[in-house]
Length: 331
Image (tube, rainbow, N blue to C red; front, side, top):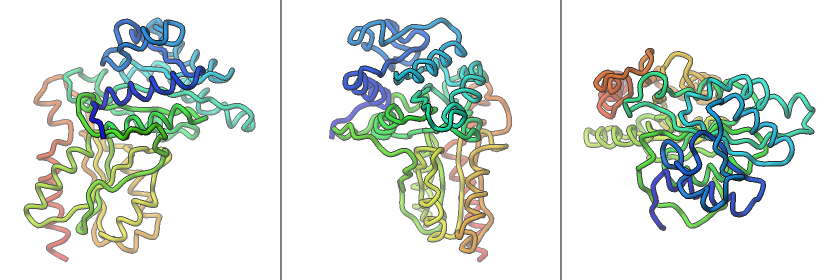
């Protein structure tokens, strides 16, 4: 299979859909000649023209509103947020309009809108440009939330998101854009709501997504050298969520760990934990669950503090080892 970067895989999905569906277009700040803040749309305006690659004013509420309006009249817009944090400026359009129109019109209207943008910390961009806000949108009925960790998933899931009749929030971690991986020569798309086991194990199940998949896998390999056998599940999408995959894994291992970069308080990890507690997997648990998350603070600008904010491979490995020694050895 050919290799490409995570960023190129995203561009590939956009380009394919624009080539094969004249209803698809993309708009956002500086996405034309400049190619976007992270270069995702480089070359698209030369290929498709300014009508389908539309530079917009710095007005997120207006951009998303235009996307919703065009979706309602048959188009399939992709809205790029220069930083995903800026979606906060368009919350009324996202939460009170895009997410609710299908319901409020009795299913007669759909909003095939994709809002995508770079998320997460690790680039020294400080508190207003480094957040992981997925829990906000996970909470809203009517929205789908996707957070791929690998190039092949980035392309496959974005293809499915563009083709979906519902509004999809598509978060791309900044630190993943330059990562490289094999991408199948297929444009069938990956179904939203299908998680995948990245590493099979027997001592505990770790549920994660986005950048933390990579860090959790590295931590699991470190601990394997010490005799710990950990299973790692990449959710890929948070809404819909492959909770059946999670439940079956926890039933096998008897222990649950959730790891995400977003702050722990009110995070998606709490929802995952609750759904496992409410399922038949509860009877299989041999230990209290463990959450490894970002600290409950705005993302610091200082590089050492930013590093401390995020779950690092070292913190994940050390926390897991301490927890396992307590919960497994003492059984």
